[in-house]
Image (cartoon, rainbow, N blue to C red; front, side, top):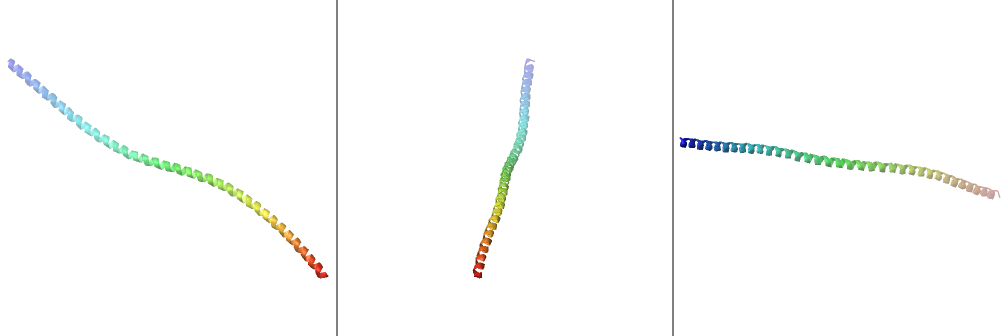
Length: 129
């Protein structure tokens, strides 16, 4: 009976140990499978983030280009304003020059007419003689 009790206890311990090892291995297998699923999910997430990172970089480049274009447009507007002011001054100066030219032409014309009248007077005087 002692031998039988000892044998039963031995078998019980052996079965318990095998059961424990079996459940532990089963738990390890489940943990491994769960880890594999987690790795696959993380890999998909990383791939998505890479794609999103590329999209963000492209967006950044686009925004930088738009900013540069906006600065260039601002420079062009400032240049246009400056050139319009220069044009206005040039037109004012041109009008002044035209006015001066008209006055000068008038003076020259008057002097020419007076000179011509003087010549004609001299010629009339000479012809009466």
